[in-house]
Image: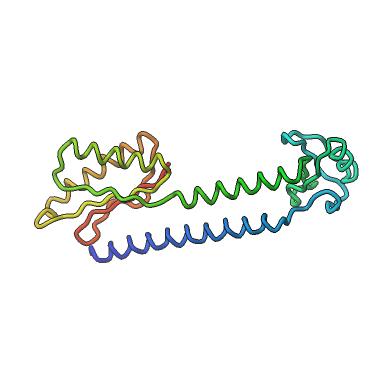
Length: 204
């Protein structure tokens, strides 16, 4: 029974690794898309009418692309297509270089967030003193605040596994505190994997 539990945990971990891998691939693809400047702007915008936003994102009105271009030229800016799927399509009066920079910043921020989320491990021991428990609780909370997932583990030595209820209670205490402070959510419930008790928290 314990062996099957360990296999399930390994499967879940592998699945999370694959999800993060494909997320990174998507972000890279978007970055390449922007780098190649596949942006529709100015005379390339060809629709009967468009919804126009100003540089601050406020609504200007619905008009023909020619009228929108005239407004953009008066402000010495460009007319950029934001969403072609809308009805009518949405455009924005903004400097093209500024728009490209904003898009690149969005991709960079998303990529950084994807890479930054790591799985940090915090190891516990049986029958730890209160001070040692508090130190590890603090470490769990700090990792969650930084946006990392936290894997909690406790290795049973000798006949300690016969006292596994203590380990479950310890994990429950740490998990409840993280949830009460809205720092983390339980991603993998406490489970025995071989001679270890393992659980995993993800940022709230």
